[in-house]
Image 1 (spheres, protein in one colour):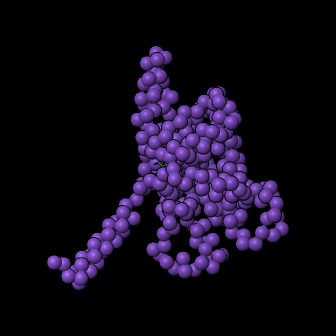
Image 2 (cartoon, helix red, strand yellow):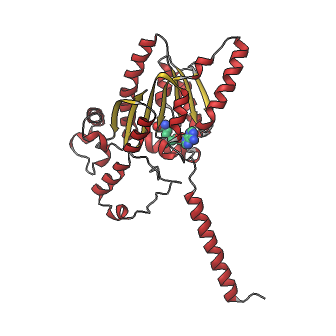
Length: 303
Ligand SMILES: C[S@@+](CC[C@H](N)C(=O)[O-])C[C@H]1O[C@@H](n2cnc3c(N)ncnc32)[C@H](O)[C@@H]1O
């Protein structure tokens, strides 16, 4: 018969095992699908001024470049958006006449993106791939083979993209650096990479301003990613720059997204005018040293 002290010991050792197991699970990083938080993401990130600033900076940076590239090539561009989420920029590029491939691991996110694409025009040249971006190459190869068979012509060159966008994806990946190998294979020689990623320096700066010193002192701090949209594994600018150097890219543009909006605890003066905030964010997004404090950074690069 089991004594109560035996049972307590067993319970204790079981709970220690469970704690170990949970810690190990926590340490096992996996790519983070937004399937369960699609509504929350849409509302929290794009339901207000934060999202408007993000899109304004990305539109300015990307559309000027794509217009120029398309003019030089004398044709619409082939664009890929990985971890596209609501895919606003990719859908706008399709509406401008480019051929666009949109990917996300989350079906719920792409359902929302499909609905907004359909609102613009049902005949946009968009191909949708609901899968981890790591599986796109196989799927594209199968689709291209089928096209080749049905059209009787070689579509091999179609595999390369003129522009690959990876926006706010790196910080949610278990192996973020692997995206560079993917781009090496999928980007055309003349192609451009648009990398937008969460800036870990902004986390420190915001918490300094807000007086959250306890959070900065706690080196083990992890946000609850089931609810929070603060990524636990952000990649520092220096790391992304070192990947770009290793993979022989030259940076053509850098911007900061939300370089002051999120830091202002007091909404006074111009902060009460959303258009003025966007105008100032656009201006300072490309100015030193302010841009490096953006909540997100945007780097465009070519090889
Ligand atoms: C923060 S959201 C960014 C969405 C969009 N690019 C934007 O800037 O608004 C990150 C997205 O990456 C997706 N994701 C995570 N891991 C992925 C993977 N391995 N392949 C494709 N998408 C992935 C998530 O489901 C989510 O929709």
